[in-house]
Image (cartoon, rainbow, N blue to C red; front, side, top):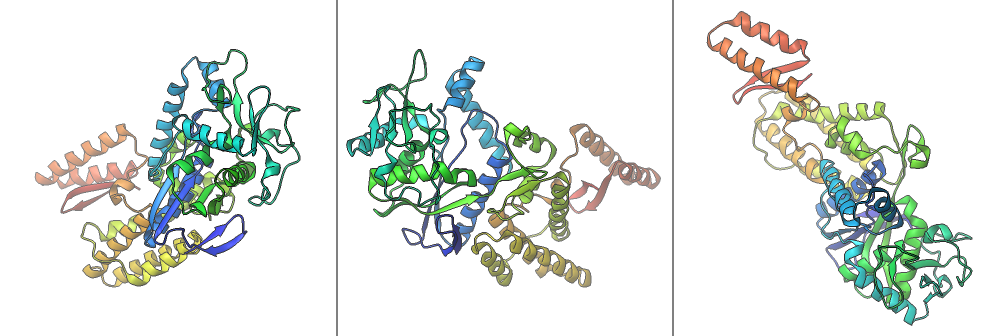
Length: 466
């Protein structure tokens, strides 16, 4: 199993802290708004990593946090009059629902910042006691970047002015321009504040993940976790700062490997609300099935930037359709065992830093060769059983192909049309029973005109969208 380490900037063998086990922590969303395609891309990338590690025999523990205290959340509280918990709970629930629609498995550990304040305060206090952090006159606490001799080793770059990464206003009391906020004291009549020994306030963004990783993962004294992941935009400053403060607080490295997924673009532009082209996932799910979106968003290697276009999505759907047509051809039936050569080829591809392009080409080849063999021998029961097993393995590893094929081809048909189709099929069944074949044929023609294909099987009449 090889992965690309963002720090070493090369593919390296995955050698976990504890043999046979893999610990992964992924930076989750700040829950003040709906998830967008960037959130989906990151979640899918690390879901794919988790599935691949499990398929290679590792026991995986996945953590993904929710930042549920942040300036953006506070602004939402002020704008809406709702409580912070109302807002964050709503967006956490929606995020989880939308990720489930994409086939993303829940993380084993899902810590929230507001539930980890004791761990955050303890880490900050440790840094203050070591003089790696300092409290200024306002009660804000800053990390002293000059105390970390390795600062910059994660991203290999350091900004001249760190005000943007700390998310606080400039202050002349900072020891160094690069120092960033660990704790923000409450100013004036702010309501959302938490008491600590150093001041009443709320945590800075970067400290949350470091504290939660130390709280929930044990590590081995040299590293806290095996893999830390997130979007490429988090490499600097977020992950750089996490690594620095964790090193100073614990005396060891935060993560053995760092992995980052590429940006999402929409028709060539990096997705950004400031550009007005942020594509919310909820809107995409209204138009496309979650499995189709999963297939499409995973069709480009996770490290590459992704250009979202409806034309490419439709092309990828047609590619996925071929798998379901094959599944329909070999269904119903019982799966036997996965073809060993196919399984090895797929695992080798995904074990090479999640080489999805090779994996999908292997699946395309399987579909083509299986169809050719079935064309020559339609009654090959052994092949049909093996094919069902192969598709089950695809679903386990890559997260698509698990739907009942006729149900898959019914996606996108609205309830009113479904009701009409079911009524016509029931009428056709009665017509056939009474030997009114002219009426039966007329109903089939009516369904065809609606864009619906039907198939009479031992299990009854099945239908699909043409």
